[in-house]
Amino acid sequence: MDSLALCNVQLDLERAFRDYRKIKDRGRPRYKSKHHSRMRYTTNVVKRNIRIDGKKIRLPKAGMVRIRIHREIPEGWILKNVTVSKEPSGKYYASLLYEIPECESQAEGAQREKRYLGIDYAMDGLAVMSDGTRAEHPKYFRQAEEKLAREQRKLSHCEKGSRNYAKQKRKVAVIHEKVRNQRKDFLHKMSRRLADGYDVIGVEDIDMRAMSQTLHFGKSVSDNGFGMLRTMLAYKLEERGKDLVKVDRFYPSSKRCSRCGRIKENLTLNDRIYRCECGNVMDRDVNAAINIRLETMRLKAS
Ligand SMILES: [Zn+2]
Image (cartoon, rainbow, N blue to C red; front, side, top):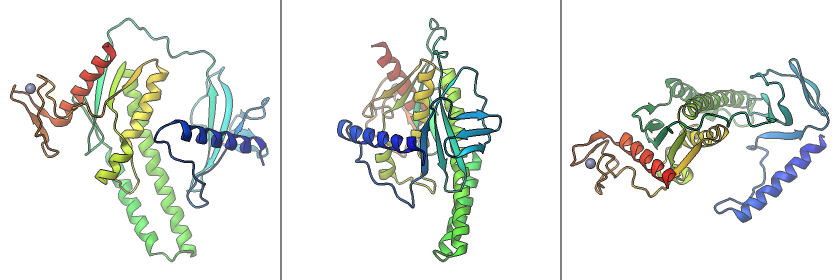
């Protein structure tokens, strides 16, 4: 047993209880489940006890383990801790936390005009930008999800506890992991592009959990693409010394005309095109995204 693994869990638990008491809407910590919880542990670096050596990593107690490194680690970064996890597919991952000595990222030229972007959540697809572009899930998502559904159906026909059940379950887990990784990869690339291209990004402050309950769009892989995108944007913008602005959820972004500011009270979810008396005709989601951008600029100015 790695002694630091236990220390870290205790710290996690303490923090969980502290957050539970202090932060509104934070759930009570629950017990882990042998069936559902991810198996993982975190260990800290103490006097070079953990190091990467070519294609191997040295871990306390485990010793030298062969790894595949997915990105170059720049000179001068300091390794702080390692989290080893086992996915349901049976694969092991090591996540390495590094400290960057000085803030290299925040020194960007500050004196030019700021670029603003508003993003509206779109129920079909993923998001709509205020510049009129639409972010759609790539086609391979659908394909992978169909495959996943097929294999899950097969699993339901296997006898529980049997050899075939275990085999099929593993197969489902492998596809599951693939879908999850594809989604993450896609969102990482998109959020990176946006964080590089804009200085201030406005998003709706919607409660994704409440939303998925009321709209039942929980698909096979319960995807919360927009929520994940928001999380990624938040830290990617912060790394670059930029801002993510959350626009109040009661701000009437859909009902307001982005050209004249009139409010259309009788707008329904079925109206895909926004038509205003002032002659403004545009896609409903684009109109909302432009409003979010305008509100973001207003909030930043005040
Ligand atoms: Zn108008």
